[in-house]
Length: 369
Ligand SMILES: CC(=O)N[C@H]1[C@@H](OP(=O)(O)OP(=O)(O)OC[C@H]2O[C@@H](n3ccc(=O)[nH]c3=O)[C@H](O)[C@@H]2O)O[C@H](CO)[C@@H](O)[C@@H]1O
Image 1: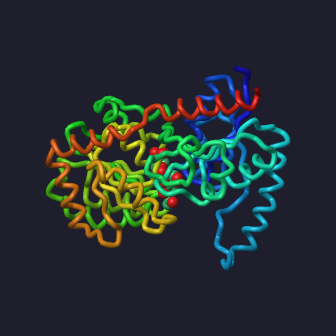
Image 2: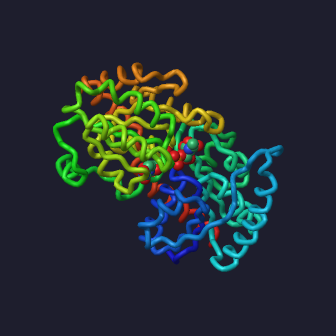
Image 3: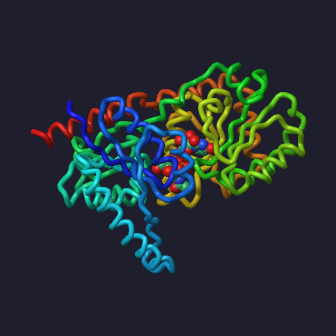
């Protein structure tokens, strides 16, 4: 097959960007030329910085602020600049197909791709379709679903359940090796806490309130806590003041080490995070972000809860005591932990990347003929 140019808008947040990276790496392996379109946000720069082999550009656009928002003027200016930049990317890169992973960054490339009658693929990671999917699903050649539960009013031949592509470096390491590389101990129970790609102040707050309750288990437990940029110092100080064994980072590129060590994950319920929990077959306690659009994180979390793979806690009703009870229940019952992990692993679609690349190539061949 001749090499094609594939434009992949996937910036704005780790949950969109990491699947884009996974597909881009596979496309490069197959001799194609992908170009990722990112946003100007720090999280995008952080996530792409170790991927020197992947070409990317960025658009200066912002998310839709709402019609009556005071940010509507700055949104419009950015949209105009974004339009000009996007047009120049189309002129120089000459894409053959657009694969969009949703989020505000996808709208302009999909719009321009549609105007040029290019094949369009829209990947919807969540259990509820986001704004971009709602705007473009009718025009897309195929909508690719991260979760089968996502309802989109299309005939079954137009929507394909692919799952969510996972970065190839996210593979399990032996516990001893992961401990050596993190300074943690293999014999201790390990809680892995994080809040998606940008941290979660709600989860950080709950954990800080919880820390005094574990003092008696201090010698048998250890923590890995990715805080996001805002609460890093406070969290680090709190763990140190109680003398816990812990790794605290604002953002980490060592997710494979941490998933390999985790006995239990406590996290938000972003779609990419859930896919990774399932890939590693881990039990989890999910605290969905309460302000996510259409409460999609709660619906994502329910997909795991329905299979008894995760406990779901509503942030506003969660107390440190209720959270600790659930954590202790899972950590103290290896049978329960094993069953939850196995239920999570059964939900994992290991061939998501291959399937998406196959669909891309099928669309390109059809366009050629
Ligand atoms: C608040 C909100 O609306 N968040 C959305 C956003 O979340 P967000 O960007 O947080 O995405 P996810 O939770 O799905 O994924 C987070 C990703 O960041 C990685 N990671 C995280 C922390 C870290 O230190 N290092 C690191 O590499 C994780 O391994 C994972 O790959 O996009 C997701 C995909 O559409 C949605 O499901 C989420 O609901």
